[in-house]
Structure formats: C-alpha cells, structure tokens
Image 1 (cartoon, rainbow, N blue to C red):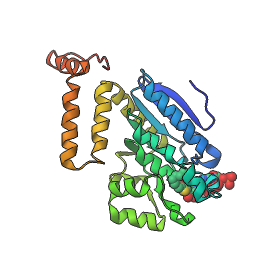
Image 2: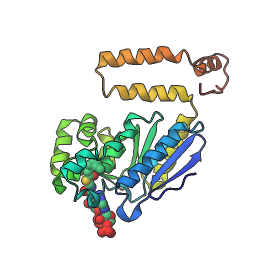
Image 3: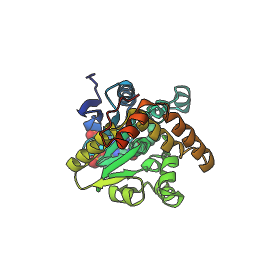
Image 4: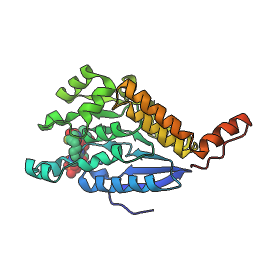
Length: 261
Ligand code: CO8
C-alpha cells in the first residue's frame, strides 16, 4: 500500500478500496497536496483489477472543513487563472469509472460539501454538518456546489444556503435527497458504507461501471438523449461475458461467478 501524508488507503473488504482523508489538525482542509494524493489514490484504485468500489471518508469530527482557506487567502486572480487552481478536483467526476461512496461525519463544508456531492452515493451521520459557507469568506462555491447542490435540493433551498452560509444537518441532507441513508453513529456509518461497497463489489465490474455511467449521464442530458444513451450502453452490455453468465446462472438457479469481462 502506498504511503501518503494527508490520506490513508486500505482494502478493508474484498473488492473495496477505502480512502480516508487524514489531516486532523486542519479538520481535513483540502490543501492542494491533499487533493494531489487523493487523485493518485483514486487513479490507483480505479486501475486496480481487484477493486470494484471505493469508499471515501474522513474522521468522525470532519469529512472535510473545506478548501484550505490559509492556502487560498493570498492567491491572486492571475495565479488562480494561470495555474487552473482547483481544476484537478474534477478528476473524481470526469475520470473515475468505479463507484465512489462518500461516508460523511462531522463537518462537510465548502469544498468538503462539494467533494461529498461529487461522489456517487452519499451516506452520512444524522448530525453531519453540511454547508456552503463561502459567502462568509467573501467568496462563492468553486467546486460545483452551486450547481450540484441546486440540482439535488432545488433552487429555493440552495439559494438560501449559498447566500446565508447557513449549514444543514445530515438528517436534512437525507430528507432533502442529498444523502441516500443516514446513520446514528460513526461506527454504524462506516459499517453501513462498507456493507454497501461490498455488495456493489460483488457484482460484475462491467455492469457496475456501466450503471454508474448511465445514472450520472442523467445529470447532464435531457430525458430523450439520456434514455437513448442508456439504450446504447444497455445494448453494448450484451457483448460482455458477465451478461451471459448472470442470465444463465439465473435460469439454472446457480450463483453467478463473474469474470468481470
Ligand atoms: N482551511 C484551513 N484551515 C482550517 C479550515 C479550512 N477550511 N477549517 C478549519 N481549519 C483549521 C483551523 O484554522 C484550526 O487550525 P488552528 O488550530 O491552527 O487554528 C483547526 O482547523 C481547527 O479548527 P477550529 O479551531 O476552527 O475548530 P472548531 O471546532 O472551533 O470549528 C469549523 C470547526 C466550524 C469547521 C471551523 O473550523 C470553520 O468554520 N472552518 C472553515 C469552514 C469553511 O469556511 N469552509 C469553506 C472554505 S472555502 C471553500 O471550501 C471554497 C471551495 C472552493 C472550491 C475549492 C477550492 C480549492
């Protein structure tokens, strides 16, 4: 397992790769070297033949308290523009093909909230603390928060949150459709997240990656193009071995032994 300064990686269950943000003194503030390490770990798990699902978490106290304010404070427009500041954050949404579950406890603020929203499934504790408080710092969300949060909870609530910097709880995240499930404690959150990751990892990798791709397309395409795209991918799955294995196993009342091809 590679050694990192700001994150930890492990393979806690068969087929499951876990990335734990670990910069406790700064509540996992997302400095550039941390994002670089996160991207390396994501790429490594995405390329690994033994990994099918990825769990991304922080600590009980903080998933991530945002982009690193101290790093950003002196940045000028020219530096941000010419170095494409935060562009590397989009790797998670543009290149990683395996599903990522965010397990959020404690603070998920600013860039931390945005990072959680980029993941494919979001689980959290009831007391998790989400928000886009950038307005209090004289700035605005910069890693997709204004777009993904608005799509998830609607303009009325998103506008209020982004303009006031007010936070919302894990329970509200669930009630508003941001989180798929909530858990009463940190231990239950991790156990529940690992169980879901393991379930996903138990299916055909080809089908899992295709399923992630088509659901995510629904966020970019209109319904007509989206359904067309889904049909094309659905047709292409008939070219996989696992489609034959899965359907034949059903007919023979056997357990499917996936080849992941
Ligand atoms: N950046 C840098 N350091 C941080 C951050 C942060 N985002 N959050 C906390 N820390 C540090 C604190 O400075 C403190 O360090 P030190 O001990 O050296 O003083 C340490 O973490 C512990 O923090 P607190 O003492 O403040 O802990 P509390 O429990 O009292 O408060 C809070 C916890 C409420 C989370 C509080 O720390 C806080 O409000 N943090 C800032 C939250 C915030 O505003 N986040 C948004 C940042 S802006 C952003 O994310 C823009 C995203 C744009 C796109 C991405 C660009 C890269």
